[in-house]
Image 1: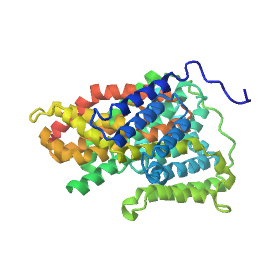
Image 2: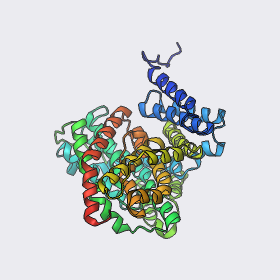
Image 3: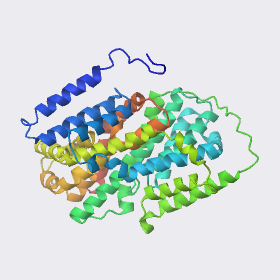
Image 4: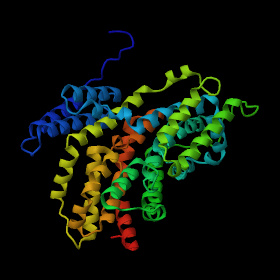
Length: 464
């Protein structure tokens, strides 16, 4: 065996083999299910690749290349659809965020910020996790991109963990990294411009139904449960699933005579980038292109803070994974899988006008099922066009039906449903199995505890 090549573990092919058989069975059953051949093939490829990503049975990069190969060899969708992830703004935001994150770490700015956070957050482990969750939620109000926030926070939190003794491999370090990923994605759904699914939902609702959602009414409707409730739930679950203890000691900070020129330039660049992100409603420039410009300035000889060759340290596995996941979502939608699944599920749902609690629960179940099929970003694109039909079946207003999907796409059952969480897992060097445990636990408690609270809050406000 060649040096550096690791032998696969025993039973390595069990999960991939089972998924392959299930995918083949789904494709074969396509005619019986009323699916066109192309739709059945799209469903089979989606099941195989999403199953491999969710189970981590194969390395993420292998599954990514497998998807590209299957989709192109079978002509499942045009190349511009299959590889559309590389043209998506989220892809470039991740890439530029990694460059900026590397600059934060290399210049020492991450360690300086971590030093400022070390004392107030290191008194106890629950206080540390609560502080990280609060930081992720607070930053969502001023920085509209999940990917950008994760790329900014991960290197800072890694430096913080180093300062307070949470070495790689300790449960507490895993808890901190997952607090960044889950806190950033789940809680931001309660803030109108703070994540991609919100923007897709509001844009589609405005285009299809002429609905306009106000910032403060939207916040009042979702912040108590989706924001604060999920935040408390995450803190409790992370402390329970990844227990650790802090002894209160803080490691010595690196000797620093003062801010270096590179730190000052990078701090100025970050302030400017944040200002442009916060004012996107005025200039209408995508956060991705702002981040890309910031990354270019970081690498610019003479005025930047990184040598151009530092780009070689970027984790391209994560970049390709994000492109593959976005491409799979676009391909699944293009083959009609999402539409077929959505209309089939609507036909099966026992909606009944005059039964608001039952209808609310069924809408949540429908949105959650679509999220498993097309990820959280795909839910509003699939569900919003059906809102009028669902409103007629439930007796809810079209606006209420549209807004019920927020709790669904902010409830992650498996990590692959939320690309920002996967990026946090990769950047934070966390095992996918640990992220899956937290996702399963948080989604189960959301359905059991938070969904009834959300329903009661909506009834109190008179929305349903």
